[in-house]
Length: 464
Ligand SMILES: *[C@@H]1O[C@H](CO)[C@@H](O)[C@H](O)[C@H]1NC(C)=O
Ligand SMILES: *[C@@H]1O[C@H](CO)[C@@H](O)[C@H](O)[C@H]1NC(C)=O
Image 1 (cartoon, rainbow, N blue to C red):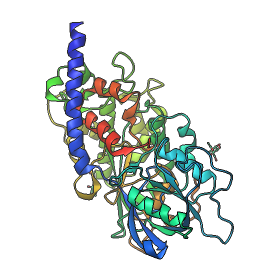
Image 2 (cartoon, protein in one colour):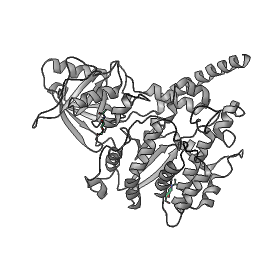
Image 3 (cartoon, helix red, strand yellow):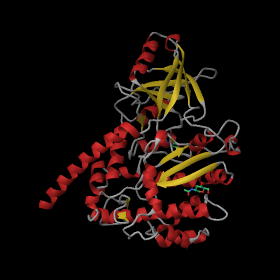
Image 4 (cartoon, helix red, strand yellow):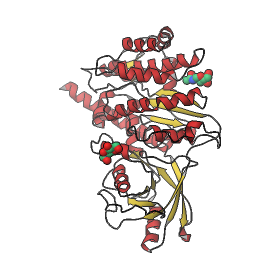
């Protein structure tokens, strides 16, 4: 009883600390990725405006899209289905953009409803006066997870003031024509694209983990072609938290951390009494980083082997089959001719009360400098220092990478149209949002985890 009370007090203190830290982070480091929006008509509104790229669907990185804006007279929030072909343009007509109000349902639901009625893009008007926010995809919603992968149009959030002006023009029967422009949403300075994938080796966190597994499997071929051709420099990353000093001796930190609380990952089932512990996840994350390092430094360099290792590991060493761990990992390495001893040496001793150079670096770079911002959502792709927004799907991601080349230097794969579409899922949120967020916060007791959660919830919202 006494213990329960103490735990409760602790929880409250930790939550309060988390919120404070999060507020600090939000003001500085969560990046709302934007595309530009030009009003072509009416004359009175002509000009360029800002809009925030939705974190689902397919933003047209590197391109533009022009259309006329339609504001529905009923179902203005787009939470219900629209009449068949309500936003579809006849041949010869300009595409139609649905203007939809924020509120009452997921952002993704609005966009899906508009897409089904033929909209070419969706502009969501904020319902309060504030700066741009990122429209996130719903977490763990069984209905939404069915249609999320099928959202194939771009969406953008605009501020209320601007939305109101568009509505006024429309109510005066003026034609509102707009050009959405993603050409500058991705920097394209030279003939090589640098990109990072922030992921996790945990394969038991529900749809979030399944999506990452699926993306890696689908993207592997493209990634390897790009890397072998010297068109990209890819770096894998793993989010790593640390245990606050006061909790190093706690059961939670002992189960979830290595190197005496320095590097932690949440328990896959959020249950310390069964299954795998966070400690095993962070160790496998480290192993995957070491596989990359060893392959990247071998002679000849073969950094693309990371994709082979990770996909094989995902197939052969699943938690579900009770195979997740060093033994299976080393079998995979051997089958791929990766130097097992070099990887072991790189991992070092997880029980040592000492820094691990590789994981320390992960923690350092997680906090972004400049335009990139902090990496707070798992999985996250960072392309040319910008966080990618949109679904985690092979074609959509390739489009974004291709937009990162200086004009005329795109590799052939960017010009081919043989890439199949719609193979994979979306859902860009973190694995860590499993269950209720409170439960997770309390279970994990890791300061960084708190930040992450709170930041996600404060800065980007799925439910509008
Ligand atoms: C999404 O697309 C797939 C494949 O085209 C299709 O089988 C499925 O029914 C679609 N889902 C919804 C909710 O429309
Ligand atoms: C991989 O190798 C390249 C070329 O040697 C180097 O520039 C890069 O920093 C390496 N990446 C990592 C993560 O070690």
